[in-house]
Amino acid sequence: MSDRRPMIAGNWKMNGLREEALALIADLAERTGGPPSHCDVVLCPPATLLHAVDGAGRRGFGWGGQDCHAEANGAHTGDISAEMLRDAGCGHVIVGHSERRADHGETDAQVRAKAEAAQRAGLVAILCVGETEAERDAGDAEGVVVRQLAGSAPSALAPETAIIAYEPVWAIGTGRTPTLEEIAAMHGRIRAWLDERTGQGAGFRILYGGSVKPDNAAEILALADVDGALVGGASLKAADFHAIIAACPGN
Ligand code: 13P
Image (cartoon, rainbow, N blue to C red):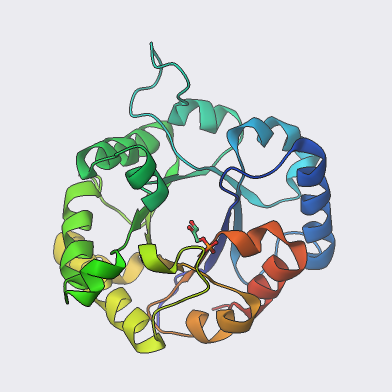
């Protein structure tokens, strides 16, 4: 047993205009009755919406960005710094999502710099790792994930400032998930790596992401080394996201 508090995070990706976003948040808040007591809920909308949910509009949920630049400011057109996210009310930022790694060619070294920027700004980094289908088929899933962790985890790695999200690339947006045994094995491997590296493996939260839905959330979230979920598509529907939050065991 551990005292890790579970987290359900919603990654809205590039979805949401102001009115529909406000309606979604209001609907979710009504269903949950405010921030739930049994787990943390963190919403990661597009950065354009962060100020739209200022103040009372935050509904007591946690807020996060989907990416940040490694620098605090400067000549980086189109980028957003961790300090800016913090200034816009975020407590978290996703770094190293596979869509960033694929669409923007982000390397492990760049992801590490982003995770360190998050820490510098006082944000908790949600660091994503995960293998492709070809890598799993080749029997190298754990090797890939361990290499990603070694290359992209911040040098000052601690449970208070970093969360790991295991997101197999082939499970994202596909409706397919690894078996429970495969998820359990990978989370166990990640925790062992965290323990070797920091001596505090038991303190880290490790989220699973990739086609988490109301009908599979309970069994995934019940696994011993799964401390929550990073949810994409289902976080855009208040009923589905609420069902996932409700399926999350507390501690
Ligand atoms: P889906 O839940 O849509 O598969 O997306 C997962 C994800 O990428 C969360 O970051």
